[in-house]
Image (cartoon, rainbow, N blue to C red):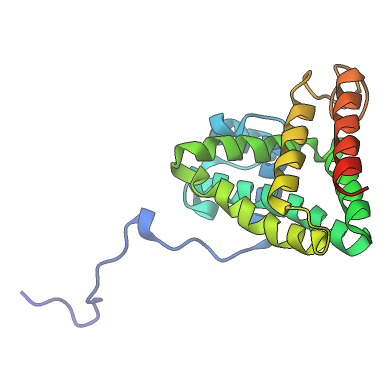
Amino acid sequence: MSAPANASSHPSPRPSQRPSPRPSPRREEILAATVRYVADHNVSDLSLRPLAAEIGSSPRVLLYLFGSKEQLIREVLAVGRAEQLALLERSEVEGGSARATLELLWEWLTKPEHRGALRLFFEGYVRAFGHDGPWRGFGTTSLDEWLPPLGRVLAGTGTDPTVVLAVLRGLLLDLLADGDGDDSGHGGGSDGDGAHAERVHAAWRAYLDATLP
């Protein structure tokens, strides 16, 4: 029996094959709320139900807007990378000399309000070692994003941007390693209080003194 004349010659896509909805204010609002949520939680263990309850949505809406939990995580990680990259680009514009730019970048990255983004970044970076799921390519993408502007900042100084980036990220990770990193300043968090934090800040200054006197 032939198909009705008005029937499509192609089968309807399965729900999982449907394209993601176009960007909308509600989608952007939920993505921003999710970024704030994961800044205080472990994104590796992200569950849609508690996330939805916290941000005033539902798992069904989240899946409709993002297609899958994996895609939501991927977009959250992209936002985290973009926030750090924006600080680097802002430092490049406002910093002046290479040394002044790196000092300004460090000052901004270590502010308490950026701590959640730092934790998210390093969690994504470590998970990317497994090369699976939403973490795939996170580390190499972040290198590709950071090295060109760092190269511009350091042009003419003879300083290797790869080494600068490695030192910067290593010290930032060290800064996050002590205590629970709350905003109260107790436990040596990355807000600059405590002997641990001062040691890390001093190490960054010493590195700049040796590299860009």
